[in-house]
Image (cartoon, rainbow, N blue to C red; front, top):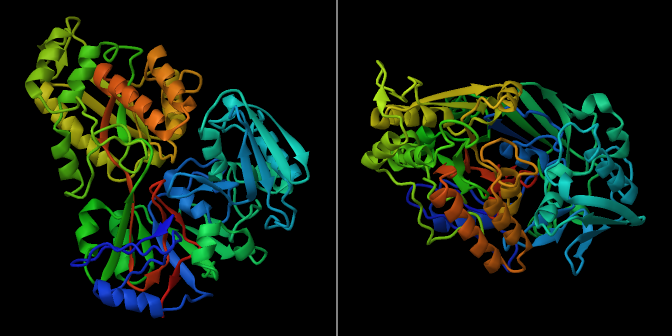
Length: 556
């Protein structure tokens, strides 16, 4: 994790790292040299209320059930995890005092930190951990954890030691222990079945803050947890850099879904920071009056996944045609006003497995795309100019997306892609943003032709297990592919990062170039703009997200 300076016009992005520890970020209206002086002399201020404007309402305040990437940095304020991932890609202890991995890599043992309590005063110990995992893997939990199929069993070894036994070698169980999705809540909270779905003040976690109040669709308020011992319980790197944190007495997250409203809230001084700056407004904040920052997300790029189980994408010629039918470079540049990052491969540049030398077949070639569609039998046109086959069936792609996950102008992106598909090759893309229940039903009925997805994960294996292996796909998009599954398995079981990267390179070549299952689109990012006196936003470069806001304060 690191603190980074915000970017300003005429000033370079300056990272202030010292002895491998975190350094404090600064947003300043001065030039880079004077900003350093200003930051060094400024002292953190406690007791403030820091107000954010965010883009999306949380689907739930229970971090064990919320899968929104944009909610993680908020949940980290009140839900500590057992481990965390440092910027070198190594797992470090947090609520766990230490952890060990057995020689065969099938057992993970956590030695828990002693003296820790949940925000309701209950002790954190092995019994509490066991109670949480009993719930997480139970039928009562309707949100099946992605790691459940590989967890064979778990056991209490003593009051502060728990062992987890896995059915296969997989790095993504360690990742799960570093995420808020397994963050422990108090055993008493686990009994409050009416509150588990929505989360909120009734549920007690371990964190620097607690949930004070929530008005759905309007405002979430966090208040400092008086029980939390920052210096003793916080992640070691964060504590070393910020021994006095958390600073703010309250953090307010106002939900402003309209981009113009968020921008107006910042420029009028109603909020300190806005999260999710629309591409068209980036230039407005790239100047001395405000501070702007961004980090590219790790994991998989935002991509289009083609459903090969039925027409039209059961034909590889149609899949390859779609890869070549759109000038994705131009589309991303236009939709994101030159501020977007086109995805040239499946993994994002923030991933430790990103390959600078990977060459993708997803290149614009209108003539080749039309030829492929003709060869596939979609060689006629209807009165609207769309391609049809010999039966008169229109070549249509039904793409029904989960509305709670539509961000970063993704609806506009698909409008642009639809226009290109129609004009270039006569393909009809029907994009809809629907409620999650409706989308799930459509998938069960296999009525979607494709789905859109980006999956933020520090270790890419977590994403690939969900997207490719047949035992737990979140969507149907490929027939069981033994070669893809085998490459995923080999990469998980490889001992070194270099070995894993080699397998992932082979996997990318297979699913993108050879089989054309996937069309990478753009690289998601966290971006924010702030008043110039805001300090201390913590960024995890390895995950490509804001890590926490517990260290944020406002210079006065």
